[in-house]
Image 1: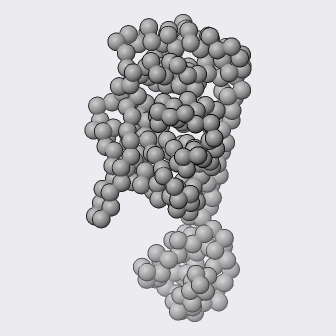
Image 2 (image 1 turned 120 degrees about the vertical axis):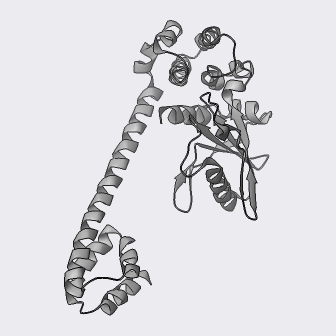
Image 3 (image 1 turned 60 degrees about the horizontal axis):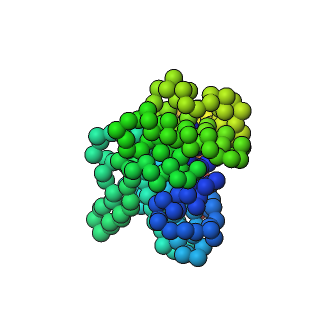
Length: 288
């Protein structure tokens, strides 16, 4: 999650650098779009709108190729939602960050009966580092690029970071560089070239930490709600079995889909039921 948050920050702060590198074009009339797409919310890593070109650049960063659901299906899902919402050209690029021999990092399309969807793949460890060394927003990615001398490349990146004039920008890029370099370098080596103090002092580092904490809290809340729902479901099922006898599998499946609030309501009214027909009528009422 730290790497995702770092790269999301870089794309939002330096979209021109990524557009220049990935689309080989200059663009200043850009707009950062919401990454939470409509329908059942799924969150993309980066969604940027190039207004003059009427084009969206959608980026996904993957540390590892494993994904649930599989990445090709996710990319199709993202494309459909984006196209439905914005109805424009969409350039999708998956950037794999960590070297691997997995065949999954070579898959650039989703295929199923009557459906085929393609997107671009970049394995950052195969990329020339020179273009990445030219722009502040891409310097952290340069640490993961192709090289015969990783230590020398890390030193090059550190030198470029040190040449950034604006202190707050230098600090933020230094932190992002240290975080991404951690994918392939040992901490001791990173500290030889980049200031560890930047991590503690940087606003972006604190922002990344806070976002991670918030996501953790949210997952905890969601897990707590689901645990409460499951407990209420078990209670309702026991009460129904005592009241009506064994419930048929179809009704059980429908009960499994009820929310916590619906289960609580059912717990209040089920004492008035005399047959499965009453339960079925109640379910039909809330679903209509």
